[in-house]
Amino acid sequence: MITFFTPGSRSNISRIGFLLLFLSFIFTQCKEGKIKDNPSQSSGLISDSAMVVCARPEASAIGIQIMKKGGNAFDAMIATDLALTVSYPFAGNIGGGGFMVYRTHDGKVGALDYREKAPMAASRNMYLDASGNIIPGKSTLGAMAVGVPGTVAGLFKVYKKFGSLPFKELIQPAIDLAKRGVVLTKKQARRFNYYRKYFDQVNDHKIIFDKEWHAGDTIKFPALAKTFERIRDNGRDEFYRGKTADMIAAFVQKHHGIITREDLARYEAKWRKPIVFNYKNAKIISMSPPSSGGICVAEILNAIEPFPVASYGHNSTKYIQLLTEAERRAFADRSFFLGDPDFEKIPIDTLISPAYANRRMADFSWKKATPSSTVKHGNIIGYESMETTHYSIVDKQGNAIAVTTTLNGAYGCKLYVGKGGFFLNNEMDDFSSKPGVPNQFGLVGAEANSIKPEKRMLSSMTPTIVEKNGQLYMVVGSPGGSTIITSVVQAFLNVYEFGMSMQQAVDMPRFHSQWLPDDIKMEPGGFSLAVQDSLKQLGYAIDTTNAPVIGKVDAILRLPDGKLEGGADHRGDDKAVGY
Ligand code: GLY
Image (cartoon, rainbow, N blue to C red; front, side, top):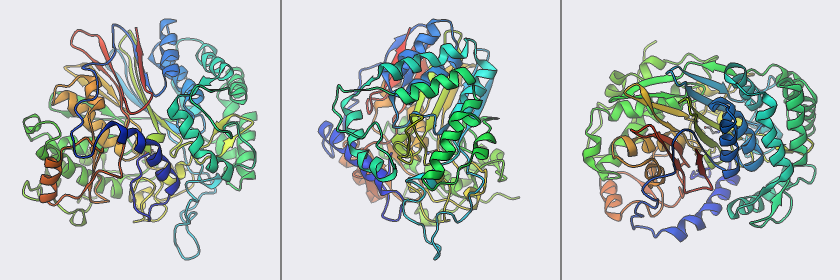
């Protein structure tokens, strides 16, 4: 997670955790003020036919195994997702939710929303005390933070429409992995050890992670394997109406939460119309509300399209300035207009139109920064974190899917359903608990994202597919809370405007700006002092210390000869596997 925000933000736990975990990693790699030249090889893995790029090598390999057996990208999605639940409990989940964008081999596009929703007993002021102040930690830690999980419903929805192999063949590799166990990397061991105190704090029982871990240790997940076996045998209803539903409702209530069996029984994943727009001769297909991702990416790219972006040079003062001003305006709109489309009227067509972006940029000046205090939402008539995870898949027919899924904070709300073998999300923190008070990503929300029973909380997840000349071009996405949006924009532009390979594009240093707080976060060591100084002279506040990692992009680029190049972000243990 990227939580570089002030003491006013609600979750210090995830902020400090992430900071500690990644600071040492980053600081051993680079020295402040010196440009870290492209740290990657010139290109990523190149494959002829099919590829999976995700946060864990085991999960990428399982997705590929399914496609080698004759499964399609959608089959591989289900197998990869379940394998991430085992191998990457930091964010891979069945206790959370996510979004998927697809483009079939014949050009049909669509989007699936399996975002968590507020329980029926949720209410607008549930995270406020009697004086109307936010109760620290209530929306991030423990049972009150949990939204009704959507992942299992999402996977079955995908299976019903697109699955080709028997479901039991898709879930079996995850069952086998859970029984065999996962060998910990150094990063994983450090994370488990860091978060142990929070696991102890919220769980009324000892959980399997409650010991000192070392790289090379193996963790086995027998309870999760049993849950998967029940889902294999009983289908979707096992999680929402069966023994697992009973387990979740009883567990949450025992920990003083409000999710009931009825909440679970009423959960539905929903097909949505994706956000589709053009940037020059590329067609971008991205996630629609209740994610803000697609709309914000559209607003940012529409705003910069009239400018000769490539001529400014990669990560130059002018490029950073232009993107920051576009981001500032897009995030101001996000804060005001966006929420669950089933509850709020959202002026999507206007927000993603080039004419609107031009109007929003009318007061942009190269001479000085536009202070965020003077930027409000646009006038139209009539606000993760590394804890999220993204994966990209292309199969040999050319079907492409981009999936971003999350527990929100690291290991969600830290509650581990011991009998079921999985963590529960803390997605309720993505609602705007109190207008004007930032959430754990520093995002400030308004009425459109207020809490209502059964409403979905606004997301920044941005699974995205790009077409060029009518053909698949790129599959891209990232974890990173609010930095997801700006990471996806930069990974795309690094290839499209600056001619980088997918791996280079993913590994390049990134910056991030989001209206409030009014500054530009930069990965330490990624930007020259000269560029930083010139931006400061123009009035931009630069922060190179509180954002050690911005996004963790996993992407696939279709090369002119039809081969696939994987971009697996060096910031994690991410891996591209293909054939
Ligand atoms: N929980 C991070 C997001 O949905 O944006």
